[in-house]
Image 1 (cartoon, rainbow, N blue to C red):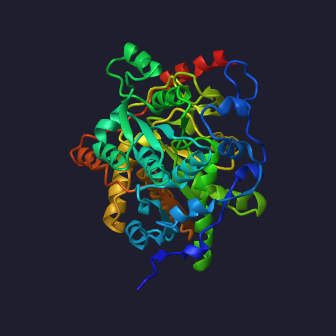
Image 2 (image 1 turned 120 degrees about the horizontal axis):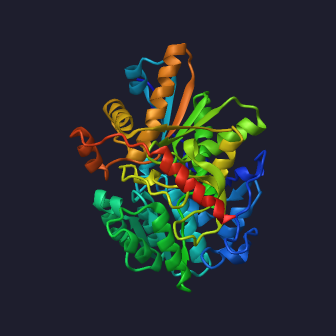
Amino acid sequence: MKERKIILSEKEMPRKWYNIQADLPNPIQPPLNPQTKKPAGPDDLSAIFPMSLIEQEVSSERWIDIPEEVLEIYSLWRPSPLYRAYSLEKALGTPARIYYKNEGVSPAGSHKPNTAVAQAYYNKEAGVKRLATETGAGQWGSSLALGCNYFGLECTVYMVKVSYHQKPYRKSLMEVWGADVYASPTDKTKSGRDVLAKDPDSLGSLGIAISEAVEDAAGREDTNYSLGSVLNHVMLHQSIIGLECQEQFKLVDDYPDFVIGCCGGGSNFAGISFPFIHDKIRKDKNIRAIGIEPKACPTLTKGAFTYDFGDVAGYTPLLMMYTLGHDFMPNGIHAGGLRYHGESPLVSQLCKDGLIEARAYGQEGVFEAALTFARTEGILPAPETAHAIKGVIDVALECREAVEEKTILFNLSGHGHFDLTAYDDYLAGKVKDVEYPQGLIDQSIASLQKLL
């Protein structure tokens, strides 16, 4: 019988996170204070983040210790398994070897607890009582609710309204772990009320929900803000994914030629790819890392590399990143976790420097790829993860045409058990491709000129 699952023991779980800032050929530009347009310092961030995370945000130290308390909770599901997708390979008739890291085995069903647990820990250590956050598809919100539950923190989640209604059981899971969940935009914050005044039927966006959560946190002394993607410390915490993969590949004497992940704010793509990009930069490994995004929100493939707010209301520092403009309002596609106007500054810099690539796909092809994976490997992927699978299938078919025995690794960043409504819609023929008009993208990006 073929060896499908490649596992490590708990003792082999990484004890340090990898910080790619130590190895960037070109450092990222600093965040800017939106009022002064000067680099933001600790004082600009301390109102909503604990100093330990601020230090990680700006650190250039290559390896950062994982606290024992965090490792103890990680051990509930880590090391996560790496699988060889033999059945998918056979169905595609490809000579490529396809592996996937299954992050859907976490209690919340995705990769997000890797940073949620860490952030809850550092906030608890700083004496914080409550965390406020946003969530798109609900994977991040449920993960932070889990982390807060373990460390005895209150949790409030502003969930993008379209996903709030599409994925009601994500809301239920957050509430099981003690979180308060609101459909964003709400009437509970000024930023939410401003959006509703302009568009009472707004479907919401991650940018709007971020504004509400930041406003909430900044308005209470007992509350900090927590972000599940984009920021440097989030990419750091997620590096445990790729670090485990490197050790697992040693067990089968293999190594990836391609590393693929879906890309919204960048956390799961960074988590699986950054340790391998380290090898590309420092060990001259010939690796192609590909981030996959939706055509409805094509940040890396059609966005501008410039300073922009991370939220709609302009509460956050200005970040140098690929962006579609903070006023960009994406369509209500089922991959709610990929409906973000910006991108991680670290991922953006790597893309700008040509160290990673990006591709964009429409919904129909993505869901077709998801069904192919579910019918061969038996796992129903989240719609976000299905974007990565579409990229994997295309690369595997390219290998078939070129008759190349390449190794492909991708991050199965979450299961789709709470996304069955999306699959119902696809099977009923209700899911259609959505491509955001270039004219509206140009208009949104043009508005950024006034920021600087």
